[in-house]
Length: 448
Image (tube, rainbow, N blue to C red):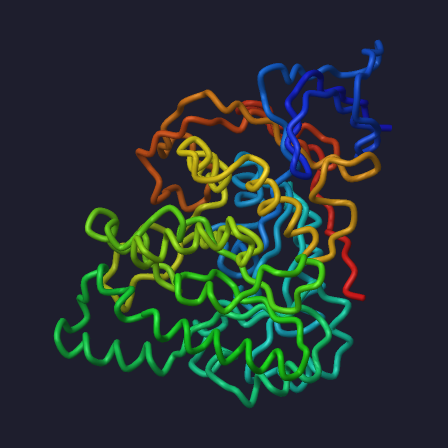
């Protein structure tokens, strides 16, 4: 039997409220919330002056396992996640091999059961090659299907580029369909224009001009139209433009939405002003865009047109990033610092603690129908993070847990610190100290 842990006197942030209470963890679950007397066999955690959040759920990461483990793997990146207060994640299918079959998906779950310190789930990949097989399967057994990242394998794998493929999938698939929404034809034409001018060495600041608002907006508008036609369950990944935010609704609860979306934290944190300083290190697809877009995304997050916050954590080696435009890999590591970034916005009075928890904990659990996760409730899994809102530190190579060993946030001063992270009742991260005896669990969910 696991030891019981009593977290005393923390300020709990949960379901729109802040209140001071004790939380008792027992057998992996939250046993009790309230005023709890200390017992001799309890391990005591003093939460006085700190805030207790539900564990962060990151709905979009690329942890690179299997096949790309020189960049990151399910052990290293889940460890980085936990250091950032993230206790559960959903990983994307663009590994090697691409996760395009039930067999490869099962193999990935098996790897995670042996390596991941955090709780895990995985999208089944869907592209032009396997779409006919996917629609024959009972997709309700998957947390979702996605084409994200598969366009790196070959052209024609983006669903947003093919209305015929989207129609086929939307009319047959019962699970969440999460798509990367850009029109490759627009991107390719812009690439041709700038290649003629600059050759291979296109400046990084032109990335949002190449992967522009029009390419995103037209793809998203078309995908939403087709999903509505077939009453499909569509989720648009990593929204980047203010224009697209107006395509989503906020007049019904999340539980009733058939069309949902997310923002990745780097699209709230960076803007096109940062390309001169950071260059290819902040080359992501879709691209980081303007200050106006950044502000529009935050506004849509606050008024509930955007439903959740993710990281799109995508580590590459520094050598893979520091290449000329067409050779530089798109993506960067973020999962260790996503909560810190959002708490900086709280410090700037841009967002409340309650709204951060709603978008990073409650809503991912609701959107993906996760079982007993995402809330501080009695009987739920004890996934928790204890945060000091008044503790400054600077991001440096020395305090990174990413296997790739770098971050676009190096040199950033954060005013908040992740103090402890509990996964299924285990105190895995304790202010720089680790207990890695127990791995995370596969996330249970319902697609009924």
